[in-house]
Length: 169
Image (cartoon, rainbow, N blue to C red):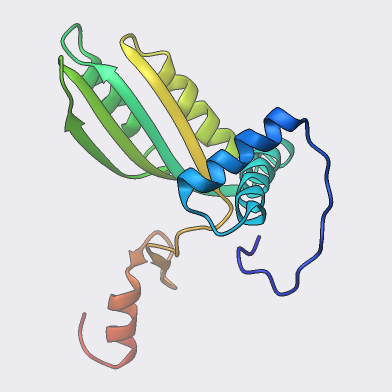
């Protein structure tokens, strides 16, 4: 799904007056040049959500944002354990402490839509997780490792380029 339109198509639509007013307010608050730009963004989000539901095996990339309270129980330990069970999907994580012993954690994820949904459900089931949101895109991260010709081994792209030049890696 490309974000750069190669050609444009015109769409005419009717909205209830209050919804139209709210749309204009949102365009102005975001400083967007037109309603069309906002509507295109909203449609892209809806299409990604739809694709995740209708093609659960397709790969998606995105973020999972969590807000949780860490003062009771073993929340951080349970979150780390759950993330370790999804090592292929969790690319990285960032954690910051908030006020009142709350924490904000953002996970960079990539994998089949069904696995990402399972990960979210597992994280949501942890006591004291107050908010969780998955935001996805169909654009993927480039491969982090390339498969070498030897079964069971992996090399990074940089190592492969170096070894292809005849330099010991």
